[in-house]
Image (cartoon, rainbow, N blue to C red; front, side, top):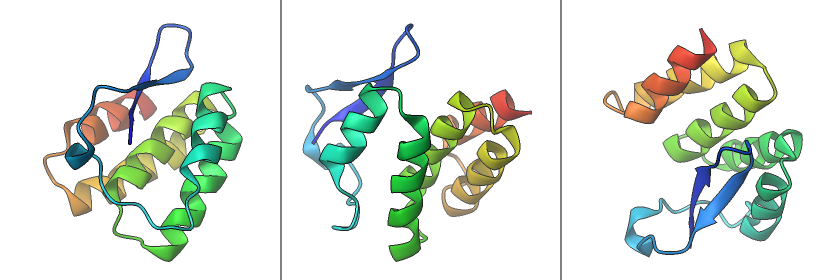
Length: 106
């Protein structure tokens, strides 16, 4: 499993040196390969759709809300990004990424 990072070009790239234990388990319905292709190609609309599908299966995935918020930010869907950050903060009240992304959305 890989951790995704935003690079200066605005696209998301993978960091292959992240331990697998650091990655939250996502439902089988979320096709990680499709998601990586969508994110590295800067297809944020597709990323939003894929994270939404995962959240339909398990609405307690804070990482999926957080990553979908990032995709919403890239699409300039600020209200949706802020809403997703709100869900993350209800699940994980000290999630720094959610605070940062919510601030960016405001």
